[in-house]
Image (tube, rainbow, N blue to C red):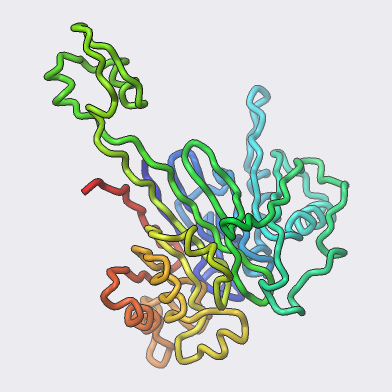
Length: 369
């Protein structure tokens, strides 16, 4: 099963001609998940090879405008391009994010008289007071959504922090386990971990042929872990003909932060194939970055090191750092940000990648060694 990440926006604060505001898409077979949706994201979709109408889940890390202002417009554009079939009702789009996101969407859609042709549900993560300074905490009056649903809104969950894991349990299905964890920023912020479940090992078809078993339904039963009885009466177990299961892939996306909170991020992101982390300013501006709730490349690399990540992708750059291909003499060198992270990660084996708009990064299947 293929898996890849496409960055629709790699800049901070606002969209510019060089970098869009925060947004990335994780694609697997049958799934297209959007992480953050800054202003202009729908335009970035149109400039990419991706289709906004295929988005079936959205994850919002925090409520700053460069991560959420594009969401109401994107939902409306998806609706405008939808061609619903009478015998196939539109599926519900699930949206996950901090407390207050439900009311934000409800008010913007209602005040603009926006009617959607598909249902949506907002699942809110309860925030904790230690995720931001006091001035960043939202009062209950601003975040209480009441009972007046948008016509296409469906009831969503309110998700509490699991004290045993220090994480929020968002999704668990046949393919994935998705968790969120707390980050410290100027407002409450979250990161997300998407872990693919183990995949069954390959069948030893050579051995099966030696045993006289031809390809057919019995192969499928063995692949599913069942035992089968051969014509000679021998009971063949799946363990005899299956290679060890393949460990699933893991992708972790951090929202804006100057530090992760607690230990939830370590367990959720341990051994991540790809860890996406902001690096708004260079290491020499660390004090300024922290003052505004942000990170530098060295700080992001420290998180990747703690998690044993295979690849660290830096993004959410200040607009002062233009993509390498557009840099002119005198411009701040975005390549230096990669070097700063690599110095911290030296000897760890972790690869560092600088995100640019429309970069697509494949996430390879794991192999047994």
